[in-house]
Image (cartoon, rainbow, N blue to C red; front, side, top):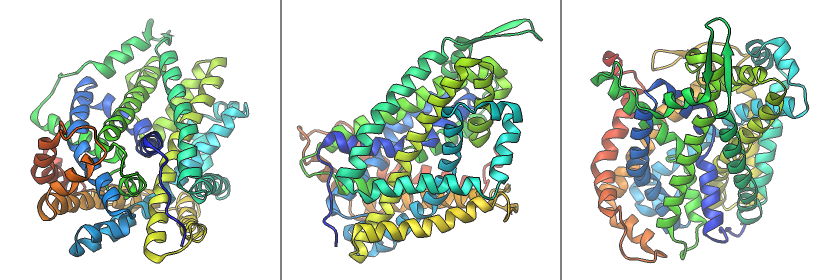
Length: 472
């Protein structure tokens, strides 16, 4: 069995954990929801939730990891033998997400390579919509891109905690932060004259849409919808219930100050999400007006933004290349953490070496990823989902893991820590290495883990079944 690694210090732990949290959810889901849900109102609710709900779940999982010293597959059983089954559920989540996340990572590889090689004209000549549709409909190219992205993720995981994950995070995270700040500053200088309406749209107008709360037409039902959107975004953005925080917590040294580290991870993740909105919302508004802000997910990333880069002229080639490089780093740090959660569990439970565990995880993930890629061409089909919509194989895996399994795992974690092991099991752990015996959000943690978080998680679970559609 391979010797278990550890992060060399607080910085490595913070950067790796923040890298896990900072992913595609920050860059293509957060801006869309902010634009859809009243701008500043969504931001305010989101930040409050991060500091309360998110803090509670993240603290619980990181503490479980360090306290038990093992991955999620065994950690829950070590906390309480009757909750051993929860370890299997928590490990199943990243096992499902990692393959299809790498498929999307492959899409990013394709777009990044297209811009960096100076071939963005292919996107513009074909049309952003058609270029994306033709790409995913091709049975070969997306698979090649998947292999590249997943292979790079596996290589970093294979190198281990210190030489792989920590070292890669220390390189990629500073670059990511420089890129996102630089592009955000540039995006605020944009303006566009619309000849049809004889008006000039500026980035500052788009920024107002993003930052200033919009209470127009706000009803109880609408507010509830925004609350659920913000809760869901915060829940997925912080990488909780995926076994990641438990895994990375198990690599943290006993003298690491977890209280300080968790605070900094919250700042990193929320700051990047807000900056992503500062890039995307003003830019899309300038060149496409409010209509462009209605798109989310792949449509926003792979259709709307290339159209924006095209309208920027020559500078759009540079900005496009830098943007997809930024997205690549964000996606890669998250993919690494997903794979590591599974690999660590295999190593801990079955006592395999890291190379064998990594190879096993890679093989299974490649097979699933291959099926997901073919789901857009050779195996194309529309699958009915429980929320009343239809989608492809990727959408089915995403719905099952994100909308069902994540809230279930977190809900049961709250029961375990809040009512079975009691909150002190976590609070005592995070006090180790902390400079003071006082933890400012200690009472908040107890109330959230026992009462508030379980209710919110149950509501999120019900939302997956479209229970609240009557609210409009």
